Image (cartoon, rainbow, N blue to C red; front, side):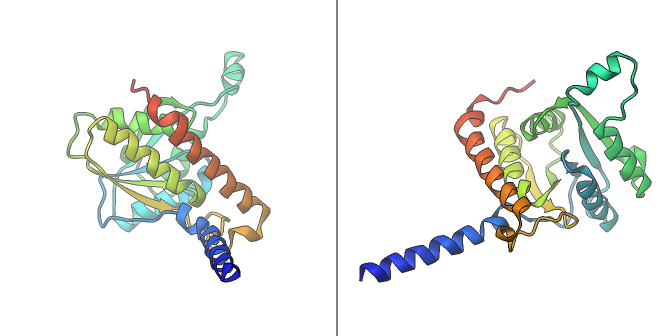
Length: 208
């Protein structure tokens, strides 16, 4: 009997681990949205996904939070012209057919998804008509991104639906993530970051 129970638990555990990839790659799309939120990071794959959503007619507004560029600021201080990732993402979206007037770049100097969520929260304050959003990110990052955005908006009493659209242009394979070193690293990293958010960051959100 013990062997049977142990075998059943082991099988359930392995099956659960295998489904981790699809759990992380949360996908939930509304029929219409007031804005697409393009999260920074692996921006080529994310820009492509955001542009596809725009051209599908689901939403005609694209929001990007200005990203902190870290040490590049020191280069700019010495007169070196640096094209920031935020501007690269905007220019790529424009080149792919999104009108510049439909792209909103929010101030934020964001270093993390939490910073991006706070910047979007600040933008939504006083705009109750903007109540349906779609987050665009890499598949492994999608679940955590939605968790962070829902927490930030809920804490400030903003009522908004948060949809999810993981980029189909990513090389991450949510169904067989354990077969590639890069995918394994992505899954393990996301779990650590989810735990960090729940245990340490969630209760220390600072609204600007």
